[in-house]
Image (cartoon, rainbow, N blue to C red; front, side, top):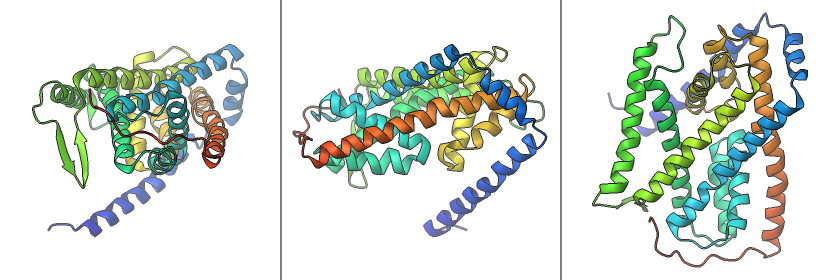
Length: 322
């Protein structure tokens, strides 16, 4: 029996609702006997230097992610200056992390870029390149770790370490296929739903790979900095990779509860729950809440500048996708 588009939409909504119920239930079961005094003690025991280092790494990650849109400028050929592009991308990334992709990654980006003079097709190509950069980096980092059998899965998980290795190899093949297409494909453009999709050149694609992978590694480094060195940095990043894709599947904004459930499930044998929770709370403050507060201020400034007519309309695109 073939499902219609309406049936698929209802199925996705039902699945999302199920995850909204399942994740809090699992988290409650994991934490029902938790001593929250232990968590508070771990939080107040953080040396200021550790928190500053974590904040600095988080800032580097946001700067790097904001530079994805500079790749997009090279790809589309628009001529907005970096001083306009980088703050805009930062605001969208912070809103995206906390309020879901449709608020920060899509709607807000269209609004802000259109006020600077870019047309919808150009903004769509910018958005598309940023998404590919992010997930290309994910494929490379997660694929490499999974193929090496990291993180070690607890006994009883159906997929097992062998299944994780297979998934890792498939992810690396997918990343290699994209890079190979950028290097050797003869046909460079396709039209999908009225939008022209163009493969970037191999130099730009390699920049995508390096920047995307480094950003995911920086995210993992923030959590690693906040935890005692027991599991090791590669394992911490591997768990982050699993929690990130779980957050995307569940459609829960900021992966709230998903991140905590995955980390506690996979690492509770190596860390006390209180230690894990303290690190994840600190991570959320450093990587989610503080950047969101800064982004709100920057967004108000961008809106004020736009309302005063300070935004300069962008000239038409020049040669792109190099």
